[in-house]
Amino acid sequence: MSLHLYNTRAGEKQVFTTLQANQVGMYVCGVTVYDHCHVGHARVMIVFDVVYRWLKQLGYDVNYVRNFTDVDDKIIARAAERNMDIQTLTDKMIAAFHEDMDALGCLRPTLEPRATTHMPAMIAMIEALIERNFAYVSDTGDVLYSVRSFNGYGTLSGKNIDDLESGSRVDVDDKKRDPLDFVLWKQAKTGEPSWASPWGEGRPGWHIECSAMSCEHLGKTFDIHGGGMDLKFPHHENEIAQACAANGGDFARFWLHNGFVNINAEKMSKSLGNFFTIREVTETYHPEVLRMFILGTHYRSPLDFSDAALNAAKAGLDRLYETKRRLGDMNIVQANVNQAFQTALNDDFNTPEALAEVFECSRRINKGLNEHQDMVADMACFTAMTGLLAIVQQDAEIWFQGDEEDTSAIESLIEERTAAKKSRNFSRADAIRHELAAQGIILEDSATGTTWKRG
Image (cartoon, rainbow, N blue to C red):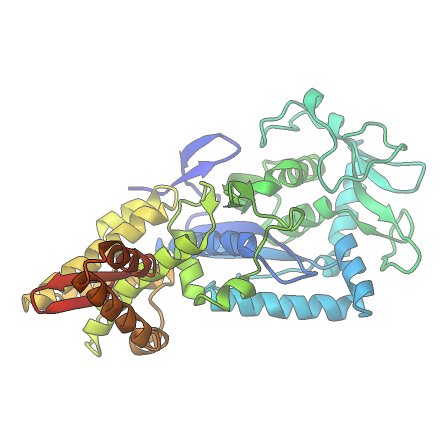
């Protein structure tokens, strides 16, 4: 089966083809580096890490570019709040970002350009837009993009231009010719960082950064552009308008967007104050648990964040690590993944189905080991599949060390349950079973007593 991707711009799954044989150019919108990353960021990075790994597995030479926005109103405000210079803050946050992504098992991209090192490319693109009458200099000295001058505006998001209002991160300005117009270059304010330009000292608007950086490193047209669903409008819509108007061509051919992370049916976001940083989550859960949790839902679907879901991901990982522990020091020869796993990931990166095959392979291995069968092929496949998903990558004995500290508490609850059953307090006995089940602990009663295992 060939690789099929859901192309947001087309609104359907399409067979993936590349501009150049065996080569992929992929751009993913990165983060604005003023604070630590949250779980929503983790989802984007893990999703496109799987995309990157699978494209490489298929034999493509992948040029993966993911940017850092390192000049922005929020960055300026945070630096002032902490009495730091801007570069010190952004350097610190980029280092923290890399620590988080390394912990989550994400491979580093080919290139991670910073906005502040790409001013010439942005200025050149803005000059081209002005020359081609897609942008204008306002009375305030800011340069604005004329949205209605671009006939294809709205094709990515499916929005009708006549129904639109100013989007997020677009400053409302009485000097705009149209409320939809957005800033390409803003005049410097006192005390803010600025760069020389044909329109005076200033700095770029947010949207122009990605158009300029992606085209500089991948060309006027490239294969894949990705990011979170929250960026589809207006950011990605504006990227298309800028790049296509300045350069001609198609810009990105395939657009991939991952779904939101929800808490209590509401989108997780900093603006709503209902977000968890990656570091907050990984104080309680191993980073692999967070990765497993994210892979358990198809990337385009909403992801419901909860302790129960993380506990379920942990229980699933425990089962896989138990298989790995049983394999011990066996000499596993690396192998290709099996057909079912390939089919799942070739179907628009269906990681839940891919994980189902990992669990099925684990089941076969355990059954085979119990029956003293030769399981070398399945063992090799198990290792290959978990490696591609970047799970079950820790030492199995070390993985269970932390759990073994909780053994005494589990045994104590089992003893209490046994006593409750003897005294015919069945409601308490059932409550203990449910309490342990919520922790991924399965009880097995027999004539000789009660044993337990991790589910």
